[in-house]
Image: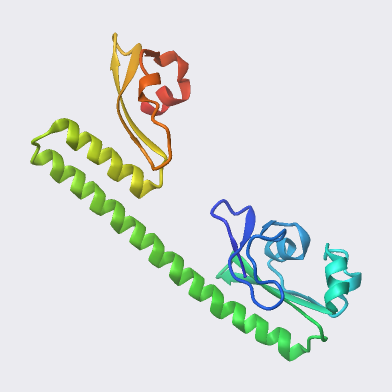
Length: 212
């Protein structure tokens, strides 16, 4: 089972069974439109064949020959008109019409399950962010130690967003210069606050555009 990445450009292998069980092999990431898997996602059409050895879209013919594979079937995982992934399988015997129809039914059920899981994860993430925001707000309402409040809030925001760093910069000299006054770093990330002082804001045009 391959799932489309958030950018919609690459299929990422999420589950595999049988002879090919690892998820970090050469086909762990398949660009949309590439090979059989990527073409199924691009065309949104199922594909099956009982002659994989002579199929030009199967790139590893040596593996096919060595393992005695003769058949392939794949279906897009669809939610309404949106592709979210691909379900595919190889076989050492020809696939019957019943097999390909069963695969299509399984693809429909898997797509629904994936959509539900993604919705649950999105809701869980949103609730976690809202909890962090509420905690930060409460921290500054009942403020006793400003520095600790800022540092703790940076840590909370960095962790919930999966960032490697979170900063607070203060502007001076009428907004021409900025200094890194607070910094949070994830585990294993080297602090840079000492190197981020007396910075001309003109060095960061993209940053300034976003602020304005």
